[in-house]
Length: 195
Image (cartoon, rainbow, N blue to C red):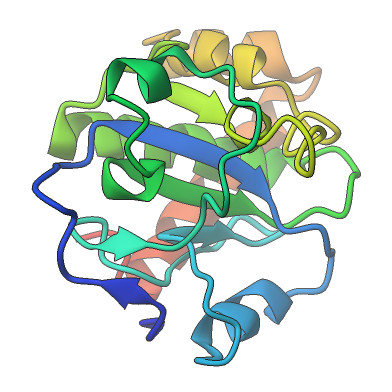
């Protein structure tokens, strides 16, 4: 579902980092609808719905409008890039949440998507390259996404290379995770997000 709220031009940059967000709502499809609305003027590359479905709203090779205004940033990459608008070099991932914890299916899809972006764009999966929106706007987005999930925990989990270890560390129910992985991959295949 392509959004109209993007630019083909990344201002000479390639995707080098990921900015993690929450949608601030819990309604399935609401964030995607908002990103599709030309009047909103905002978008993200991906939305991860409650059941783990990954919706690509903007091709990751293009510039989505997910970072908003930068306000009292703390992300080192922002300063190292000469305070260039982070939309130019980051990929935005929104998890549907109004503040509640992510579902197991969202966790699986988020980890899978990060690994996929690492493979496709060679984005390092460390805290320098995987940031929360709050690290770009510590005033208006101070809880985005940390009210729902820890960016540190995401980076820790995604770097456990063995899926069996991930299952053991993130859940008391590894079988539920295995089912969630299967569901997320099938959903990604059906909507074209997975080759």
